[in-house]
Structure formats: structure tokens, C-alpha cells
Image (tube, rainbow, N blue to C red):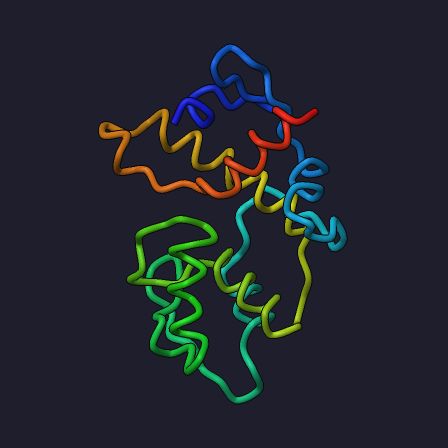
Length: 156
């Protein structure tokens, strides 16, 4: 929790030690390629994301700010739960939001993303959520990724 509580633009502080946190460091500690487009923080338009994800003849049911998971078909409805639970660490699974659909489109091979940059962005999202949370234990975060970054920093 200390890591996320102290996370700034390009570093965090744990036990008084400054730890650099950048997409380049995440690429190095995870072994993920730092290639592909970096998604901007602007909100994706739902209809545009649906067009990227859906196959010809497939109809997705829009509900609020997302689509109903059941209309994705298999294996995509189950993969959407995995993306929401373990990649974006979000608990709202009643709809699949645009950024989840876009990650599913990456899995379908319809677009690409710079995964280290995405993970860096998700760490900052978790940090913002933690700072707003009434109960710290309610915030799910990327503990494995944080451990890799801290371990890397300690060996430098």
C-alpha cells in the first residue's frame, strides 16, 4: 500500500527509498515488449470501440457506458471478466466498458497496445483509487508488478 500511496508521476517512495516507475522499467522487469501504440487517457468512445471489437454480423447490446458481457459470446464474455479482475483490477462486471473491449480486441488481433505503458497507467489509476478510498483494503492492485518493480530497484 505504501508504494501506491506514494506513487508520483515517475517514482514512488517505499521505506524512505525512491523507486523509479516508468514504462521502460516496467518493460524491463516484466520482459514485455515496449512496442505498439500508447493509449491516451482520453475516454474511448463506446461506438468506436464496439466497431473495433465486433465481428461482422455480431450485435453487442449497449447498456449505459458499456456492453452486456453475455452479448460478447464465448470465450469473450469469460475473458472480459479476467481482464476486469486481473488486468484493470475493476470490480464492476455488469457491463464491459470501452477500455476492456479494446483489450479484448488486442487479444483478437484487431489492434495493439504498448503493454508496459498500459500497466504503468493502471498503477496510477490504482493509486488514485487508493487515495480516494474509504477502506484501503477495498482497493485491488497489481501486487505482483509492484513487487517486481521494488525488487528491481533494490538490485540497482
